Length: 184
Image 1 (tube, helix red, strand yellow):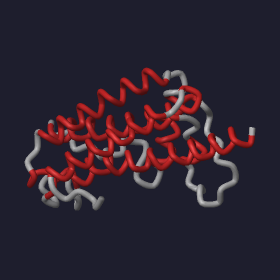
Image 2: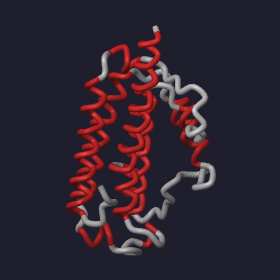
Image 3: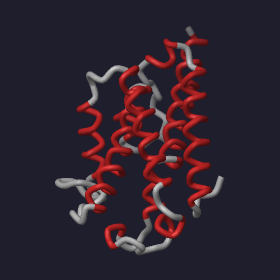
Image 4: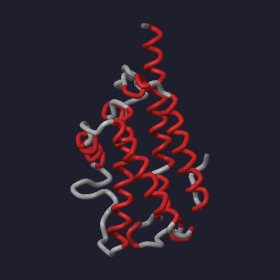
């Protein structure tokens, strides 16, 4: 699926990818859903998130926290507060550290809580998207607070693109977990 460039495509992609992600999660056994990740020494998995997120719950809270970034950023800027998407003290060069703080914050959050939080935040993000016109979402520089980009690109990143990222991690986990089970 190509990157959404209209409101209709954004809504469709976000909902479809969200549904696909939950179908994947719901297809897992409780053991698979709660197991710690073990990706081994795979050289293709160099990015920090492969070490940071250690189970399905960690992925769900990561998605939830990025929904919160979008929701808070949009709300603050709509009120005229001129806030950046990545809150201080972080920026686009240091957001990896922010992601680690999100991870730390949720180590006592249960899988069930994470699931409910993400279901609720996705609903709120979809309401946000539906409240904007196609032009407001996808016209570059429509809002001064989106910089040289557009609001829609932030919404795509927080929804369908992030859900794709989550499913890749979940599928890698399932493959690794099931391979280990076969070896017994």
